[in-house]
Image (tube, rainbow, N blue to C red):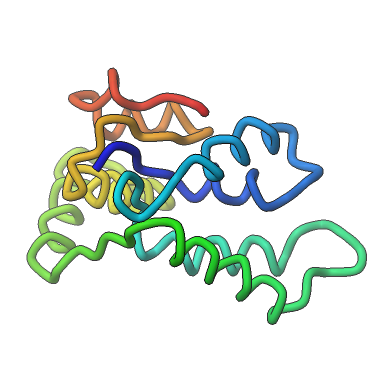
Length: 141
């Protein structure tokens, strides 16, 4: 797999008023299922975030579902099995990470599983902290 997209990139790609919209949309538009992936959990994160954006009117759930379906059409979704999930949680606990860092760790486990050459995120600091061995592959769009 060539690239892995973090949830932050997909949200910025779909939210036209996001400060990183243009760069994120450019990366998303260049993807296809053979060259790009995301973690399955990102589908729920995109849905949850996009339906709660501070915009009026709120985005309708049906509209956001169409965005999620675009992700599924364009990206290979990576799923961790039970052993991979528990291994990642164990590593998080051993390293003293807590709270939302667990979600970033799970996404990084998906990126590893996909063998991504580049991991795109707008959360460089946390991603590099969680996976210093992947730091040279983690970048912004």
